[in-house]
Image (cartoon, rainbow, N blue to C red; front, side, top):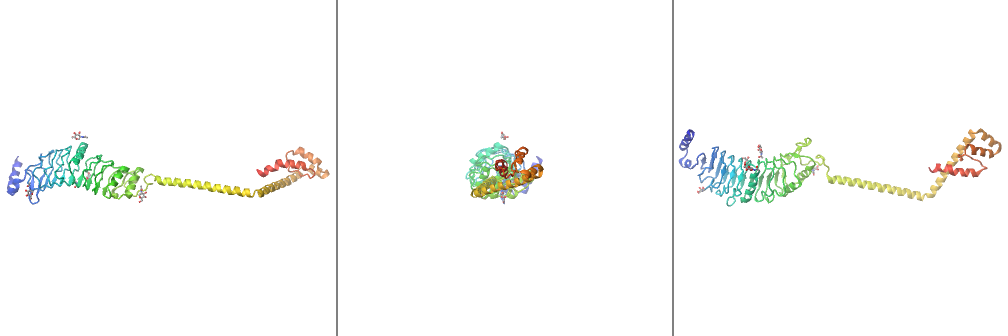
Length: 411
Ligand SMILES: *[C@@H]1O[C@H](CO)[C@@H](O)[C@H](O)[C@H]1NC(C)=O
Ligand SMILES: *[C@@H]1O[C@H](CO)[C@@H](O)[C@H](O)[C@H]1NC(C)=O
Ligand SMILES: *[C@@H]1O[C@H](CO)[C@@H](O)[C@H](O)[C@H]1NC(C)=O
Ligand SMILES: *[C@@H]1O[C@H](CO)[C@@H](O)[C@H](O)[C@H]1NC(C)=O
Ligand SMILES: *[C@@H]1O[C@H](CO)[C@@H](O)[C@H](O)[C@H]1NC(C)=O
């Protein structure tokens, strides 16, 4: 109470009367810069009777839980309002609709749990920048916000900051009623995937910040969604990318996309061997998968070479057979020649052997012709006949040649 009395007393003493009297309690008003500041005063409501000249209103570090249609009245000159860090939990319908020239609204660092569908509605849609960084209490607040963005008539919004809100997923078409949006900040959330339609209707986007979420990769539909945004700047750094084979589509997209990605910051978080490796330019072998097209080509090459080899072998075989056919007479002659040669050689050997090993035979043949020798042969060597060279007896010789010499030639 004492401090309060002193403050009031000092205030009255120090200020130029016309300015101080117009400035609400707990605030500082600067007529020259047309700024009103109500900082860290534990205010429970938005101060009333803010001077009409004010263009910038800064109300931060207070305890204002609720804002509604009577929070801001008669403030047609206000263009910027900073309401960060006020523990605001609830925004009622038409909270800002008296602020017909409001361009910049900062609601960051609050705990919004209830957002009326028409909370952000301002006649004429003057708002250009909305900061909701670290301001949503939970998922209910996000769905409320999605509705409020749709019903808020925010045609002129250029920048939207939704960073640091633990967002795990974005409702499809959430931004489709913000046709002029140029910069969308979604950093420091818990996004794991981008689904088809997430960014539909955004034709003017220039910057998309997805830094510091929990993306481990981007699937085909996500990449299609990002590619649809054209050659905009996309920040994808500081995500826990898993550099396994599944990430190859994302790498290929990084290799080729027309979007301007902060590729220096897009690095593998795992596996260990690749951690901190830049994703763009990673080879398919490095991430443990063989490009299916290459594998197919290799397979096809192998098959082709087998077929070729088969054809060559077949051709060689045909030529060989053809040569054999052409030479069939020569071959026959050669075979017969071989047979004769064999026969001659064997006969020569055997004959000599007989003569050398059987002195009796040698004696008898020397003594009186071949009759005895033939009888002896029949008894001692009944099956071996090539050896017998008996000029007198041709019948025996012929019979036996066919059974013993021929197999030797052909086998
Ligand atoms: C807004 O500013 C203009 C010019 O500075 C002034 O004439 C007008 O009265 C102000 N509006 C209000 C509601 O004070
Ligand atoms: C939104 O507010 C946060 C905290 O107040 C600030 O760090 C951030 O830069 C603001 N966003 C934009 C786009 O200015
Ligand atoms: C979000 O918070 C509000 C207020 O605390 C609560 O009523 C609501 O059930 C919460 N929603 C979820 C999904 O937790
Ligand atoms: C993300 O959060 C961390 C810690 O809360 C903060 O230091 C950092 O500035 C935030 N980054 C962005 C882009 O909001
Ligand atoms: C990306 O580009 C590099 C060379 O710049 C190439 O070696 C690699 O195979 C490409 N990755 C994919 C998945 O296309």
